Length: 326
Image (cartoon, rainbow, N blue to C red; front, side, top):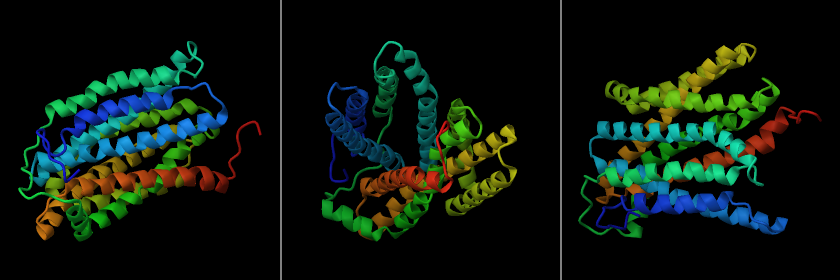
């Protein structure tokens, strides 16, 4: 991506193409085909891999845009905060509304309502994604020299602070593990799986509260603020361990605080990654934003996949989980 320039800029044209492709492949992923089980598994695997690839093509330029909208670090933090607000609000809305839409359409279909629910979500999401292409402008001029693929990898090797930031980003894997266990906890410990929607509501509230992040970064270094937030999250988890889950109100307050702290660290991660672009440019005289933010996308994918594998394969076995009724 760093080697491409179009009349729209370096990244803006991806905000037009990627949403259309993502919409199509998402619908294909939820479409129920009539075939034998082997064919269904192959179809699910192919569509899932294709979706994941298109997601990367969409995600990398989305976050890279913050580096070409402005050179000012404070303004970049505000842009990343706004983007993270939208991302987390969107995830929360999907967690809340998709199950309800699927339940509504289930009576009219033989696929438990998943395809129609996905269609409704895409009809709402596509205009919002295309709005980014129409409204966002690139204001940082591109390097006059052509950037080659070899330049991008040389730029990446020189960007040592990036790898430190990504390492800390990866260790949010434990938060993803906890997120994967919530549904089992709500069903077996609290006796109500619908409480999972409360996590979505907490995500929306936390995303709004994250608007204070730019004000905090004006008074404190991002690295120091990041470490404080991580420490606060650890403290909340320790309190949660001793308090238990008998007091449901207190439990959800603590879960909400943890969600807020983790969400703010994600904002700081994206902002610090954007700052490392200037560091690498100083050492190489080449500005390579896409290869830098691809590290965030790759690390995020690896983190979530490890969390799912650990959640399904290790942690449930460790706590001797058994389905109710067995």
